[in-house]
Image (cartoon, rainbow, N blue to C red; front, side, top):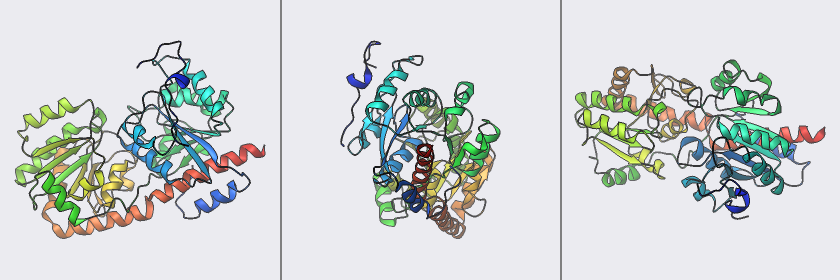
Length: 412
């Protein structure tokens, strides 16, 4: 980072370009509008995170800010470090401020953030994820007298545990946002947050963007040199330890022994790439597994996939599963976090115990070899996402929560 410790990164290296209970009901946006009617301007809301690489939580945030009603929420992104690829992308449409912290223990980040919140007249701060941004962001918001302080969390346990330091700031936090009912229970039971402060707003995606398309399917398969009729199994996840891609490779080897023409796609990038490549070589799958890195056309790639597999050690409510189901791709996943609420055995896919490569391989084979079951499960998956995991319901949930807390604070 090109930042000396006596610099003010907000002025020197910050760019601002261009000017939760379960909220699963269509009336949320109407309620938010009614709550907000007493305020003549939208609530200036900063979403604070470390950076914006291509990842599930970051993609979710991009879709969220783009979906807000501009009369209710006026969003901006604040990155403690560099913007990252998605930060650069969204900077064309919304303000993106970056480079507020020089090192892990750079306590001057608090004053830099405070000045930014005051200068931008921020009225709500939502920290995204655990760690430094959750800690420093809430302290700075409190000192800057920001009316609404929330923390959105997207995972359970390692490596995203909240930790003792962040629990100390519970009193100054208005809401902790969970992404599923079981995730909300986890925040109460494990993280020990007051139940009254835990709001559940399920993740949501654009179901029109993620939908089956036979023409796109054929085109993508040609681009990737995949046989038109070969079964294709894919995973979309950052290449990090908790995603357990080595299990995905082991599953691929087991499936390939039974279904000889099967092919596999790994979509994502991260520090585990070398280990995954070694696993592919160990199982002699160099011609069956393609590592595609980060892609901005996930919706196209999912159209070419027959079964989506997720091998994670821990999750909350992963966006990638919603995207796959919306594209009518059955999912086989480890039974972690709240995934079983979405991946329902025999209905939208199957769940297996974490680390059980053999059971996952058998379920994938079952879906590949039974075309009727595959089609039925795919259709039910899309129907479930349309009903419970739409982008509109997620956006409405955030609008209602922020507006309600803001109105309550101002009425005091």
